[in-house]
Length: 253
Image (cartoon, rainbow, N blue to C red):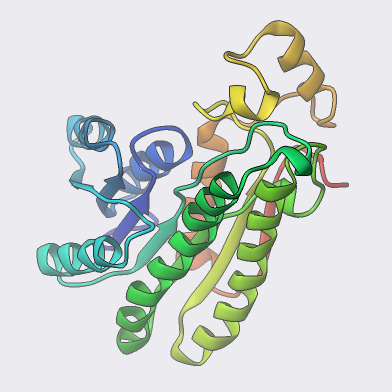
């Protein structure tokens, strides 16, 4: 087991990529604090982990709140005595919109969750990792940070911000033996997918259009990102920091 005896926190773990990552990390031996603003979703992920004889705790958290991020770190360390992995995965999408039609509230919400949420996670997780002389801080970025699609300029900007933040944090954390890595997925089969497509639900036309932009001919499944996260969190990735791993089927070529 690649994460045996490690302790991980995964935000946005009530569904999609976060749920898949939490389950995958637990399957590799980690004890996982499952965090989500949706209490029912977090508990459902914990049930999946416990059903497979893993260890997990559900905690309701709003990543835009400093107190909630602090509580995640304190709960994990109180329960299991350490913190090895923090996966800042929680995020929100953007409806396809021309910039003149984007209101300030939409801008603020996207940046609060996608950027401020990562900053706050790092603010409370990295000091614990620095003191321990080990740890991995993972961030869900996006191929939108590298190759944006039309109509998603605010989302793309938020993901570009966390790519740069990952590099800056990696430099800060490296002398303490802590790694920071961003993962950039292409569009993924999660509850957010219809929004990216500008539709109420995924349909054959929209799916085909998106798949045609990916050289490997399909979109991500949440497990594709989960497998990458497990690898990056493990000692197998000991020399990877400050990088952006594109899990995109060739989309960014």
